[in-house]
Image 1 (spheres, rainbow, N blue to C red):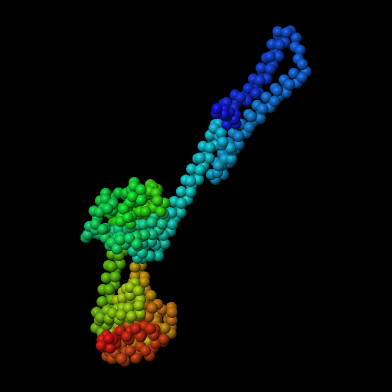
Image 2: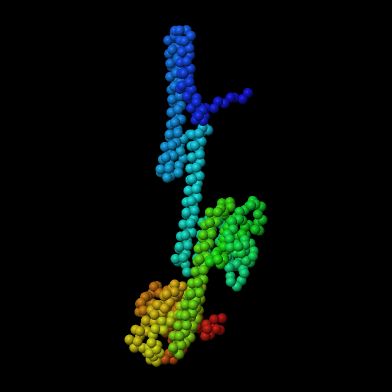
Length: 491
């Protein structure tokens, strides 16, 4: 036989509890008084035993007290919940109210509902804080990259890495369109180092999800429908394997590329908020790419203009024709011998091309004078590095050339011009340009002398080691020119 479970009045609804307590407080005493009335009415006299009367009064008092305590408890819980709700709303800090919620009465249900709302609010706030941190991280990277990186490739690598990390994913791919080819070029990738896709340089524009995104110019949010265990091993490293976010890079209704993010670390699908974040980032990436292309065209045009000026300078002086090209060749050979990076070599090569462009501001009387310059003329000639720096200064893309162009006549001992900088304050690119410039000047005909023999020029360089020239740079040049003069000796 199953036990009969009597539900506690504490777990009852407010209406039921009120009915029970009202009975204790009012109905029971009323019944007793009614009974006494009928006894008096039918007997004509009321004879009550003193003990019976005392027990009657005691029961009435007990019933009234129980009713009072019960009602006060119920109203107290309701008042407590009201006060705590007011406190929560006033403080603005989500917290649960401390009322027991074991029963199913209205107060308990309201308390549990409020606590559930608070829990959801706390979860929402956590997600918002996460999203805020994610956006802050991305914006910081964008600002840092835009401020410090003139190389669009490095900038895009930084943004892709930050975006993948910000939405807690594992892999990302950035593809760019081409005007002459329908293929999409892999500009940057992240998390694909150990997959076959790390070796792919381009994909056809009509393949995978990227082709659809380019054609439709719409973003894709694709969930994973099948279980991860059922995905073939050969396709797990596919950067277009769902779950996937794939968005177009659009600038003025023109698709510049595709940004694809896949493999969330949480092993769940991406959501709409993450799609919104990636779509916003794609807009900024498209703008950065277009600006970089416009800037590259402007730099190319400006560089061609300056190069034309440099050629114009050499055209004014029969003896200096080809000087910049030769200095560039010597400089590149020295840089490669010293093991400099390709970026440094490019800087040296461009600086060699433009190092004398400032001579455009020097008059022909001084520039083409057949004899040595006097003190006044020499002071004017010493201004050509400053003039050259001023010519390349307006273009930020050529800022890396300012130092070697301005200081290619500085000496290690600080007695050069125009700023008398010395020692380690002179960059290695400038030291190489200085040696290459001096060597070509000595081995070329000038209005006031014939070119020097190779060994004589080498001796002059060695004579001023640690005075004008860096010893490592001089030795590298000597190795290059001697090898070129006598190829058999290098075998």
